[in-house]
Length: 193
Image (tube, rainbow, N blue to C red; front, side):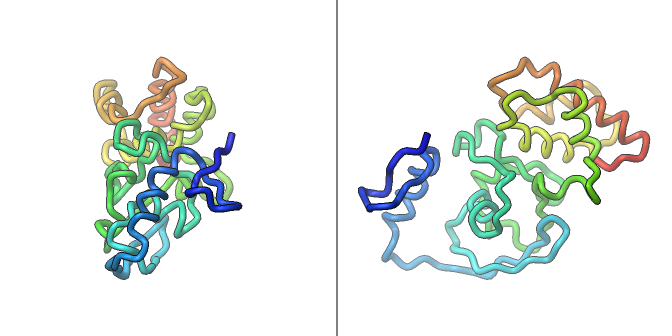
């Protein structure tokens, strides 16, 4: 359900979870914001955009680039729904300033799979029913892909540790761990994480 925010401005409706962020941006309207040119490799392509110094990586990805697979969850670094890979390391994009990824490689959920084929982790989550409602799934998939890029044969403890920053409110995590183990098996068959 959409609620009306925006200080009563006619025609302005935004999602409730983004109201706090938009209100903060509205308060600093009129103050001088420094901007810089952000150059990075986003999902395998070089990209350059002018960004404000205070824009979060999550907002840059969703609003500036149109990549909406990365989800806004808690907005405080507690749930992992916003996880992306920065140089193959899982990163919470809701806590990361976009400017800090300058010169780095950033991969979002949209980068996985090629030529209509799912990646090993995507297949694992699909085939082993590793998601319920799906809201947290992009974060889990990216954290898992980051793990498998760094360690293609992790132990159960490695998997649990790698996914420790992600929260799913629907499952008991058993299916998620099974999905990652299935992705490991697919990786041994040559499917990219």
